[in-house]
Image (cartoon, rainbow, N blue to C red; front, side, top):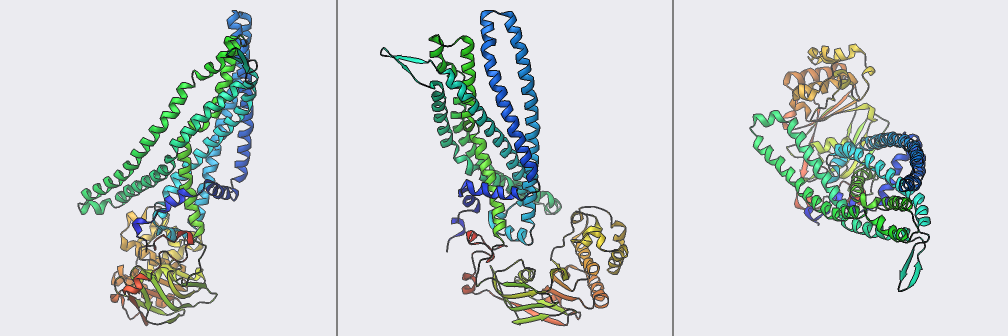
Length: 604
């Protein structure tokens, strides 16, 4: 069995995939986007503006000859006329440049909106956010990929796309001009006059090709380093957020030194990658900067034979230099943007790789180690021959066939680390490693209460009605539910918006989470050890409310040996088989994952 340290990371596998597959995946997302029409119109507008700008550049380049010839002749009248022509051309180009800037910025905005909304949809498709969180590096810090990486990809894609299109149009426009200016250029070699058609065009192509090859060779490592850099940046950001969110606990435990050391370690990992990036970028700069400096004189050197032979006037020479420079700028687009292209590819790998894994999560692979799930149309929870596979081993129930009907109060008891949370996740459809069958009532009839309560940063009314809109319940229902559990002091806060996880204690959050039961009145309630955090008084209030107002609701609590109460009329037991043979038989990944992710570990 391959050691985890020797397994290639998901990031490296993603970076090794073809660029075309990532582009195809991105285009698929854009085709299904509501911003598709806006992006098409913006792209068409940019193409028209760039075409008009290329025409304006040709006119401006042609203006060089009469203007500088007038200067050479000291023709004041002609000089003034050409200044008027320049003002007209420059004014038109200014309007085109401003319009291009607006269109490009709107394209960035719409492209980011399209990518981000698509990632929202893919990530928060039921169960995906939970499943990908346990898949190693690809599931770490999804907020970084959705927020920063999607923004960066939208901006880089727009800038590179506009730049490439502009360079292409200018190349097509000026290569004809440069070819015409090459006419008549001859070389005297051993007494023989040799004319090379399109001499300045071939010189520009050769010059740019040499520099492009050099920048490509030196810029290749930047792609992988860029992907690794963004991963380390997100790790540091997450560590900082974690310290900030738990600052109180760190302070009272005097753990600042430990946390500082952890932050230094994360920062050192980032600095290692950044140093390698500095070295690679420095090597690339030898080519890009050297090319840029030599380009100052290269056009004059190339055009000099025609000028000294008398085939070009001084104005014609400057016109040829301008045309050569435009062709060079178009051909050197790749050279100037080698580092940016590497950055774009790294960002594209992170965003599309994340999206690809999310899409593959729903492609179930037939596997005997996969638990089968079925949502039936009847109010009955059925567990058949259930064996749950985790790192600890196999977890099984004391009965092979279990049926729980509405109105039953069932306690499922398990020792510490016996797989209680795994059973809760399995019934919820989040965990599929193992065997057997889980049949559940319709999802709208079941309410799950996890060990850690979740109150969104909304109004308290919205948090209690979550995930339904607050208008789903009348005012008196909120008041009655809170009052019934002795939480009437929260009634004045129903319309207050706050970060409840910071303002309330864990016990208060859990008590409010149980209030949802009385508000939603589900047919089945499944609880993961959350009862153990309640006081005896709060438990008795909840049990009394369930017996009187929700007599037909099935209440299943998965807890430890001390969770017993006369409220529960049926008790089941969890057992864990942690034998060596069982541990070695566990799969390398959750069976619901695609074959492409077989090296991913089980979710924690």
